[in-house]
Image (tube, rainbow over all chains, first blue to last red):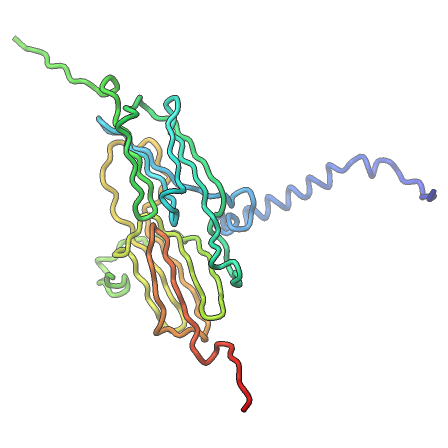
Length: 155
Length: 123
C-alpha cells in the first residue's frame, strides 16, 4: 500500500470549473474559425450533408438530392407512411488503397435521409432518375390530393 | 468548355461572384496524382479547368434549375463550384486528363518521366 499526502477534497469535487473554461475556449475557437473550415475538422459537422430540395406543383412532388459519384445500384429509395427514404452506401475506392492520401474530404459509409411528403402520392407511378450526381424522384400526387377547379355557371 | 470568366467584358460578369468549395480527395501513386472533386449537378459541358503557371483552377457551372413548382425544402446551393490547387513541379502539365462521372470530377495529373523512381542497371 502506498501512503499519499492528504489533499483538500474541494479540489477534486469541483471539476466543473475546469470544464467551463474548456467550453469557453471551444466557443472562442468556434467564432474565430470560418464555419466552412471548421466543418472539415469537427466531428460534429463533418457528416455528409446530402443537400435536398423538395418542390410541389399541382400534379407532382419532386425531390432532388445531391449524391455525387455513386453507383445507381448503391442507392435505395423507399416509401412508407407518407415518408420518402433515400439511403445507400458509398464505398472507398480500392484502387487508391495503397496510395498516399493528402486529402480525404469525401464522405465514405452509409447514409439515410427521410422526408415527410406534403401530400399523398400514387405509389405505382413514382419515378427516379440519377444524373450528374443528382437523384431526382418524381412522385405524382393521387387524384384526391390534386387541387380541383369547379366551374360555376353564372346565369 | 466555355470561355473563362476573366475573359468576359466587365459588364457581363455576374456580381458578386460567389462560389462553393467542392469536397476533394487527393491521392498520390507512383506515377501520378489524382484529384477527385464532388460537383453534383455539373455535367461535362459545365466544367472548366484552367491551368495558369503552377496553379490549376477547377470551376463547375451548374445548370439553371427548371421550375418545378413551389419550394418546400431548399438546401441545394445554386452558385457554381470553384477550387484552386497548386501543382507539384513534378507534374507533367501537358498530360493532365479529366473525367466527369455522376457529378464527380477525377483529374489525373501524371508525373513527368524524369522524376519517377527508376532502377538503374549496372553493366
